[in-house]
Image 1 (tube, helix red, strand yellow):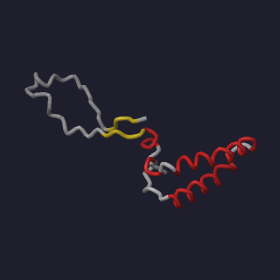
Image 2 (cartoon, helix red, strand yellow; image 1 turned 90 degrees about the horizontal axis):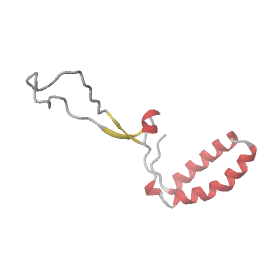
Image 3 (spheres, helix red, strand yellow; image 1 turned 60 degrees about the vertical axis):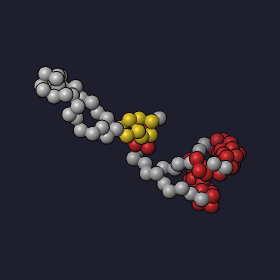
Length: 99
């Protein structure tokens, strides 16, 4: 989910027109849209992979993830991960990896 970060508006109860100001005295609005999970966990965007690097990365992820699954879920994972990997390989320009 996209969230806005850095745009903090604080109402301190002062009427700018009564104080002689025009209400536009605040600093520059430094609001930035960020993906909430990436910002929360302070993930860093990785440079784009070519197909060979991506396959190596996915194989390493599969190798590390499979033993952590319950035995009955491992078979389903192994069966479905090949199709998912092929799908992702068809869209390398659409991927943005952050670790």
